[in-house]
Length: 551
Image (cartoon, rainbow, N blue to C red; front, side, top):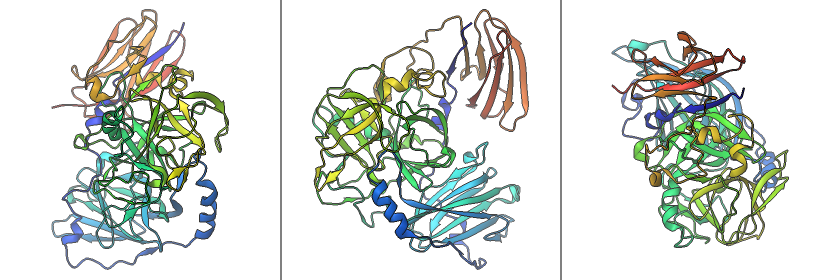
């Protein structure tokens, strides 16, 4: 028999988890303490920057590879072999580490072990305390214990870990890589002008026409800038038919620098004074809305797409949008792109000609990509770093993500070359499993919709009833019942086992017809793993479920 899986509501509660890192009023404890131990900085080794820049001259023209801003330095720094501890009068303690990498414009850190208890905090800041990131808390603990931070500006950076007396000794931190940012990807304050991208680029608040400007005003809140261990790309929060703020994020498959668990994301990076295809620079934004950590859900080189779920939380105060999509094979009469070129502040571009299709080799992507062609941008352009950014049709729905192309600036005009976007309609169901197609994730209740609008248009929580056939096995968390529900087809006998995040078995059983509701009222909120085996045909699968106790 056919074995089909539909996953309902597995991670929708993550959209309300307050786990993001945004500069606030709280400051590291050491800033207000005297008589701290002296510390010897960790000096990073130098590298051949001229060689790196020579490589960039060639690579920057290739949008089919991520745009590089930093050089990766391997280290082994942890709470035991580096830094200093200071014990406070009440028994609490703080650990500080000072890192200097000469000539760096920014520094960020990759943790191969990040495991801190509740109540502990981690801050990252520069030596003159003009750029502060944090606090990172236990909410960022992952099963794989990995974490990547957002860059902090400057070449002299501090990490400060605070551990309350009640949990002393429970934290584990180990840094495996330090990224020396040799190119600026945005200052934290308005202390300089940005001009990393070409002069023909248009800031996102520049007009692209009265027929799209109102839509753009919402869509710009869906676009995010990605930092990936020394490289950058662009992507988009994307809506699903449950309209539940599941933190799905669409980008390009070739955006592949390092483990997604260590990636960091920034939203609403928009200049307050737009430059519209001129030589004038764009001043930076004071807002830093960043989060860290993602899990790969699906990817496919055929259309060069990658779908992530963002694990670090998205603050409701950020005014984010979840973009809609169109999975039909219909060429848009015009198209608009929103992106972050060359590590710069958010930009916009427009193509007024009808899109055409091609399956072609693109730069560094090994397989031909089924693409929409933008023949020649009429407003703005894209660059390296724009990879993975969305292409919207006139209705403001995603029809593709940037795979590559030769378009670039030639002064305040573009060079007349084409760009290629992996087609959304191919990404939808080209693959054979939920790990290489979009349909299982963006239509979790199997509504079979062909188009979906952005969340603010659809309405949060508005769900189209699913079309369920007898062969389908459904696994989801029921928020009202506070239960994990497994719904079964009429012919199958299923065995299920539920594990907590530590791998401990907490429940198991068998069902043959109908559905089973596993009560989770006595369980804590968090991540659980549901293993289901179909004893009829021997197939099995494991799914993650987020339990949210709203008490």
